[in-house]
Image (cartoon, rainbow, N blue to C red; front, side, top):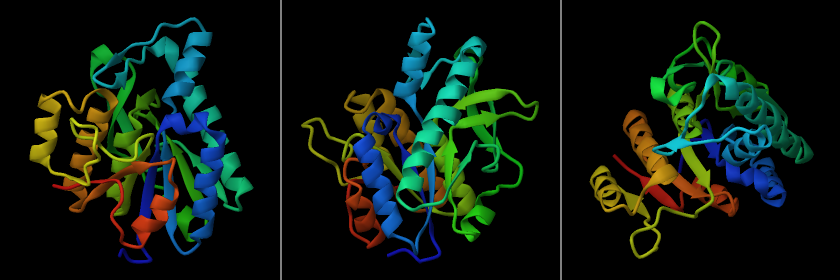
Amino acid sequence: MTSSNTTWVIKLGGALLNSPQSVQALFATLGTMTDTRFVVVHGGGSLVDRWLHDAGFATAKHQGLRISPAEQMPYIVGALAGCANKQLMGAAIANGLEPAGLSLYEAGVNAQQKLKALGRVGECSQGARSAIPALLEVGKLPVVSSVGFDEQGQWFNVNADEAAAAIAKQLDGELIFMTDVEAVLDKSAQPLHQLSAEQIDELIAQGVISGGMEVKVKTSLLAAQHLRRGVYISSWQKPENLVALLNGEHVGTQITM
C-alpha cells in the first residue's frame, strides 16, 4: 500500500468525455477518498476530432500522435484547455471537489516541438515552478489539460499520456492511465496483469499492441523507468479500480521496468 502522502496522477482518456455518467461516477469515487491527493491529467481526442471536422479540417495521425498544423491549434487548444477541461471541472464541482483547471505551463512542464513533420505536436521539457504542490496543500484538485507552451509562448498539443508521466515524475507520484479498456490485451484478447519491457517489444513486433495503445504502453514503460516503480493501466468504466489500487490490490495491467 502506498503512503497517505503519495500523490496519485490519473490520466483520463478523451473517450471518457463521451460518457457523462462515467465522468460523474469517476469524480464521485474521487470525492469519497478525501485523504488522498489526486492530480487529473486529460486529453480529449474525440472532442478535438469533432471540432476540427465541424471547422472543415481533415485530420491525420502518425504513430498514434495527431498531426497538428498551426492553423488547427486554436481549435485543438479550445477543445482541450477550454471545453474538455471545463467539462471535467464541472463534474468535479458537482461531486463536492474543488478543481483548479491548468495547462501544462502552470503544472511546471514546458513543451518543445517533437518533430517538424507533426506540426505543433510537443514533447515535455523542464518547466517553470509548478503550482500543483500549493494547490494540493489547500485541498484543490488540479485538472490539467495537455496543452503546452514553449519558452516563446507558442502553443503545443502534447500527448496527454506523456504529459501525465512528466507530472508524475515531477511529483514523485503514482501514475495510472485510465482508458477505455480494462487492461492491455494479449493476442487472444485476454488481459495481461503485468508487462515488462521485453514483453512490450514482443507484442509491438507482433502487431498485438499498435496505434494509441502502443504510445500508451511505451509512455508507461518510460514513466516506470523514470519513477522506478510500476505504472498502471486500467479502465475509467470501473472507477472502483482506483479504490482497489489505493488498497494495494492488483487491477488492470501493471507496466514494470
